Amino acid sequence: MLPSNTVPLLLVVTGVFVILRLFLRGTSLSYLLKKWWRSIDDRFHVFQFYKVPEFNHSFQDNQLFRKVSTYLSSLASIEDSDFANLFAGRKSNDIVLQLDPNQTVNDTFLGARVSWKNETSSDGTNISRTFVLKIRKKDKRRIIRPYLQHIHSVTDEIEQRRKEVKLYTNAETEHRNGGGRWKSVPFTHPSTLDTVAMDSDLKNKVKSDLESFLKSKQYYHRLGRVWKRSYLMYGPSGTGKSSFVAAMAKFLCYDVYDVDLSKVFDDSDLKMLLLQTTDRSVIVIEDLDRFLGEKSTAVSLSGVLNFMDGIFSCCGEERVMVFTMTSKEHIDPAILRPGRIDVHIHFPLCDFPAFKTLANNYLGVKDHKLFPQMEEIFQGGATLSQAEIGEIMIANRSSPSRALKSVINALQTSPGKKGQRLGRSTSGNGRSVDEAGNSGDGGGGGGGGGGVICRESVHTVREFRKLYSLLRMKSNKKSGPFDLSSPK
Ligand SMILES: Nc1ncnc2c1ncn2[C@@H]1O[C@H](COP(=O)(O)OP(=O)(O)OP(=O)(O)O)[C@@H](O)[C@H]1O
Ligand SMILES: [Mg+2]
Image: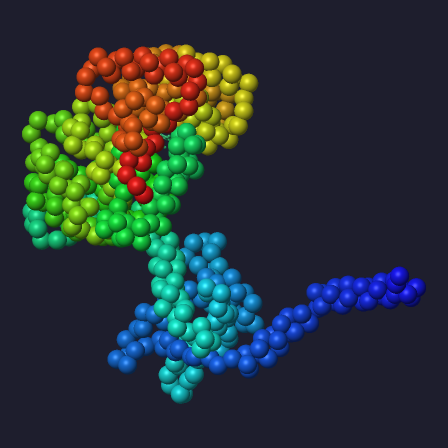
């Protein structure tokens, strides 16, 4: 049994404890106590200091100083330093924090606590700035190299995100090998992954494929493979292929190299153009099917194949290559084989889910009494491209009801019946299937083993599969054209 006065005593102690905590939280005392505790704790350790001066012995910029400065600005703990400078960033709503002279910022890495001081001194005429890293001696060997590596990769990523994205086009010139074949302008295409209307599952898959590509440098290197990924976007005109390429480039913050094959002299010129592209870029060849279908071209099929392989074997890395075409039906299988094309993305004509996204983006309409009627019309097979519907909506943007009625009129008078328009093969649930009628999940029988969405060489088989696929679609089986044919 507890003595009778123990319970009130416990209550008083708990009360005092709670009041003390509230008091500490409400004032700066907890912060001061933490600071004192740290300085006492520091006295029991031996430290190693590393200086990162702004200039080297030849008075040139020390790149590491710039990187450390960028890295420290990205740390959340910089907000805890007593003084920090606030600057406007490059983008209008960006605010950048920078450490004030002689202030300290703490960081933790692999369980070790380190701190950085921004030491500034002046001899009257010159100001010298140095970052001083303080690490416990016992942690030094374990963390110093990986920590500096970590700073490099964090700053590389930040700088990549900040840089202005450029669009390069190959200019026609008489001096074919003289360099300067690429002319650049700032890349200001307004498309983003959010504004392109497409199946949301498919969009998320492409997004995570790109994210995983960005993170897989070590993986590719361990495999002895060049860090690259190639995409094929195919579907009828005006379904968003080019808009999606632009959105991808913006998402990656990569420069875009738009290769105009009609301005290339021959195969070796194409190779030269490739050699003049930089890392971290999206290299785009639009309308490849049209080019390959032309009778006489300056660039041969093998030139194109070498171009695709050149990316992978000789030149640079962290490249994304994108080809667009309306249909891959008559394309040489060598072009489409895994390794040359990693991901096939089908862009079908507008269906009801895509239409709803367009109505929301263009007219700000999330729901409308005409929607059920429109859904029926879409399910009946009538359809237009997203570009056509977008134009009607822009023209009637002042009156959403009029815009929707105009879309209904256009849909009812459009010649589009299932299968009549090139590349049309969309399921009622908004997902798309490849032109051979196979679902991208491999269930169609040709894309097995995670392979490329299948290519049938026998037409009768293709027709049969088309029919089979339509029956499957009617039973609402989910399908998707997205396919990763090689390991990420
Ligand atoms: N899926 C979509 N989502 C939003 N807007 C789209 C979509 N598809 C097309 N548009 C609009 O239509 C216009 C044309 O689209 P885009 O150039 O991307 O089509 P495309 O598939 O590349 O056509 P083409 O094969 O003729 O080059 C763009 O300005 C875009 O705004
Ligand atoms: Mg296009």
